[in-house]
Amino acid sequence: MIELKGITKVYTMGEIEVKALDGIDLTIKEHEFICIMGASGSGKSTLMNVIGCLDRPTDGTYHLDEKDVSDLNDRQLADIRNKKIGFVFQTFNLLPRMTSVRNVELPLLYSGDSEKERKRKGAEALEKVELTDRAKHKPNELSGGQRQRVAIARALVNDPSIIFADEPTGNLDSRTGLNIMALFQKLHQEGATIVMVTHEMDVALHAERIIHLKDGKIVGDEQIENPKDAAEEYRLAANLEEDGLKDAIVKHE
Ligand SMILES: Nc1ncnc2c1ncn2[C@@H]1O[C@H](COP(=O)(O)OP(=O)(O)OP(=O)(O)O)[C@@H](O)[C@H]1O
Ligand SMILES: [Mg+2]
Image (cartoon, rainbow, N blue to C red; front, side, top):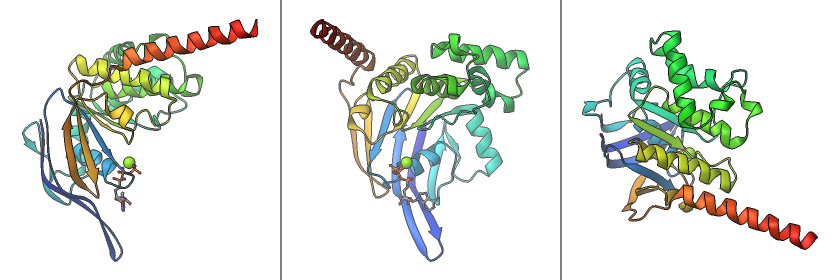
């Protein structure tokens, strides 16, 4: 589905050249759930931007669904993004004045769908993330985890063949993060291809495969035999918290 060969990305700033990606060879198959790990500055976001057709490589070839997308212009890249790709960001990137459902419908404005069709798809995406009852809320009327669920619904709304997520749990507490990871695992089970960037091993262990980046190079590619089950961990954490509360109440009495 995704095939990168000898991908480099060089940023030129005056006299200085930064090689953010340095000869990346990577194949990602359909229905994979893959995490990209690496220290700050190792090239994770740059790699995701290239695979997500937000940015072009300086060198190398990139085939997406058998089509060479290495040399497309901005319009052509935007077109591919609209048809095939959903993005989820660390900071949610929701429009503050719009309700959840309007935020979710946003990517469809460029799709040529009728208003009726946009509404139907928006409602359906919100249902997938179990937020139908928050459709009329604006971002500041939602919890952090709910905001990220809206952002995930927005990424799902045009039925992308691949979902990219850059540190999607970075701004959430650990329990809410598990809830979001459980949602990604559910989407994966339903057939989605997911590429996630994280610097936390705990998060990465929910994927099937982990790619390690260092100085713009792939230094590790491991298959995870038994990915952790986020829904199960979430239940355990919730139970522990409840037990803790009971203990505290008993002690208090
Ligand atoms: N637009 C840009 N112009 C110049 N240099 C850039 C640009 N974007 C990134 N870089 C450089 O490229 C390298 C890789 O950056 P990138 O954002 O991909 O790192 P990252 O692994 O995502 O880090 P983090 O974990 O901090 O998000 C860094 O050295 C960075 O300074
Ligand atoms: Mg980054």
